[in-house]
Length: 527
Image (tube, rainbow, N blue to C red):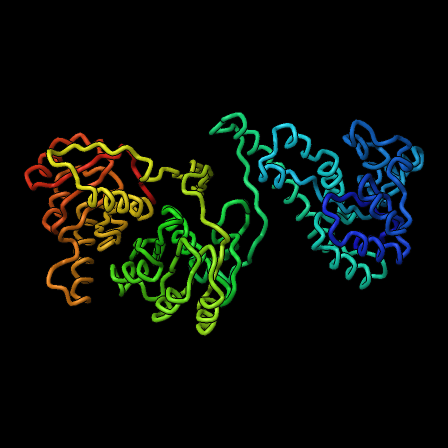
């Protein structure tokens, strides 16, 4: 069936956006409207002619509305194959009228969970009849048009107008595919909620769903297709941020911006913090008395790599910070908010994207991380350990000073967001050298020291920035060589998880060089 004329529509929606205007347009085309509960009430209030579903079925809505559309006269009207003699005979025998257009959007289960509703309220907001009708109509898309969100109302009216009251098969296929995807995403939200409620970390079946947020020009490389999907509007970040200016974000922009904002969210919002990211790794991170000062300190860590990078801030951007940041080319700036003066300054940089999130991500918040592998996908809980919460164990003869402790915790926060093997040198609340993604830990230590030496030369300093600094390692030192490299660079204190069979050798090397060292007992591999 290429075209399917619409004579009868069933409307049952939770989201009433655009409902009356859409129903009015349908009725003006002579389409009969069947409806349920609150939807019917809204349409009748607008003086539209509506047949209540209970009139159609001969049964009243019952059990607090749980039972209203689960009836053969509804599902027969959706599932009956047009032009099939047996189906039409059964329909005539039992008084089943065809339903040509189904408009359903589901009970707001996701929103109910997001606002922290009780278990019973969440269960009550699990839609049963809606998904059943959606799946029935989508399966029978050869003759039935199914709509699952208000955004498609205009498309449907345009399609009907162009086809003399009918819809094309290709159009119905598109809407059917969307309907099944919406139903699947809805069920995935329910199953994931149940798993959390039951404390099941590894349910036997795992499903994920999301809504298209942005179709991207290409993926990580120009020959790859890509898109951004929204799955959690409750966590501030790049996916849900408002973009005030600049061209469309790319796949790599989004990936790097997410890395930047997640890192800067590790820091207390009361203490100005800035992170500069390049290729998902930090090239400079700092805390200070103001955002401007934090940015200047972060930039000094690696000014070469910072060019064309991503800058994330943990506070509302003020004028002075904006002025400082716009002195070099930056791809993206992301922060909870920005002053009007800052927005004006950024607006002069047409190629800069400014994203505002409305808040910081919760570094201690629960969540899942998903990575595809051949034949499946890996799922793990988010790394929600914050260095401020970790009990540090001093394992050397010398205890770190208060100033060293502050830098150690700072460095370990940063190391959590550096690709393994990760080494971070830090001093006075700022990174001075970052070694990322090396196959051996000692190489990361050497690269970070070299970076610090180069940054010192750029500033005209007589000695490397690592002198008097501290060093953080995302995982234990398997040998003493990495620690010795850091000591030779001039560090005075070390923070690492510990747990190596050679911990005693590493501790001995630290003691021999007068270093203070603490173990966290927490590893932060990042791949």
